[in-house]
Length: 479
RNA sequence: CGGGGUGUAGCGCAGUUGGCCAGCGCGCUGCGUUUGGGACGCAGAGGUCGGCGGUUCAAGUCCGCCCACCCCGACCA
Image (cartoon, rainbow, N blue to C red; front, top):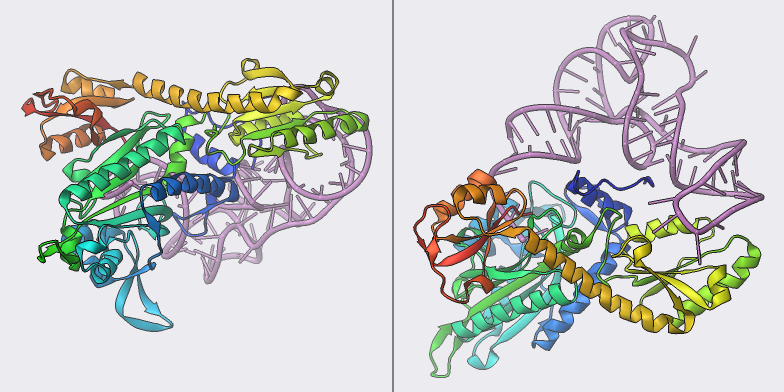
């Protein structure tokens, strides 16, 4: 891998994205087209995501389990919309142990069907409800075009699957988990997101209603970063998930599902990264603070290294790394850790040892401006404060960027122009034909129908056809 | 699947109208000098030139078929 500068984001965003991932050692291409290897540094980010989400799932009453990778083909076929949605992208196993299988097995593209099958066995009474299960798993969808983290044939995610007594409870669960995702995105990843409902054409195959959180990437395109579905009774009917209610009457359950994937790593990369490389939010960064010792000779080394080790100890409350590699210059290390997005760097050299000080450098503020001298005995306290500040600064910066690239076009011509480089908020009459026209003309789609923009009734005219429109939507090009 | 492109060392590339030992930069290994913003010298290692077949005294180079990957569309967390 070369050591030259990265491509400039403004000039070639997708090349910047690919190179950052490979050079920061987040992931690499696998021998199979469209598959990726998540390398230790990338997986460490995912582990931190998992931890942040998992504790939120547990706090809302969910438990983890594991369902099988293989699903009988016939299961997929039980829910009409579901199979139509997924059929084109299924990987199917037809041979096992050298024998043609009686029934082909699909590699799960998602697990509503197997889990529905099991829920039918487990749920007999209203006393069994609700069932609140999550699984951490890999799934396979045979996509045409792939991109590291954003869309690969196999990806890692969590999928929550719940069953409830009533429609209202299922709806409450669906929105609760959407809130969990939004809270995670904003407060852990510093990624501002818009919660909203998906249009009919963009909803999950088999869902009654799909909700999403949408984020704006550094090139202004939208990224669906998490989804939560109210499945109504669709899967309950397809899989006979029935229970006896309080009046001893047989009822179908109301189910939900919700998922967030390794795609979110891509969201973090593209929300915060700059031309030097990654910028990781402190709360999710595998390494929060890196210490770079600086010395010219053995005598200085003998002074500096112990001081650097002492600093490491003083910072042990954080995820800290001492970069004591001998063969590399400090300048190289600065660039290297900036590429990898470590939020805070500590430099310790002979001058610092003499003054009992250290230089702190913020990743989110490049150059001199982001540096400050700190007394060694105040190092841990200052670093802790800075990490909190950086976390907040990243969120604020991303929110400002999104705001600066979101507009409310007055007419269709303006809409077409605006979505070239940003999000457009506009009224939509609800007609799929209008939605399709925008996509045809501009490649932009309805990302979602934001809750925030539709709290109060504010009727208007459809940006496309001029018909009366009750709701405002976000149009944007998307990943 | 349609349109375009590329396959030569880990990565990026050069290789003339076919010609002898297949090269360059970065990276890698060893030794020495360096080290407050991407150090330098010397010595090394590393190749079925994407695959198969053909033309030829001779193929990285010409011809045919195949394969893989990338970009643009249709599909998508």
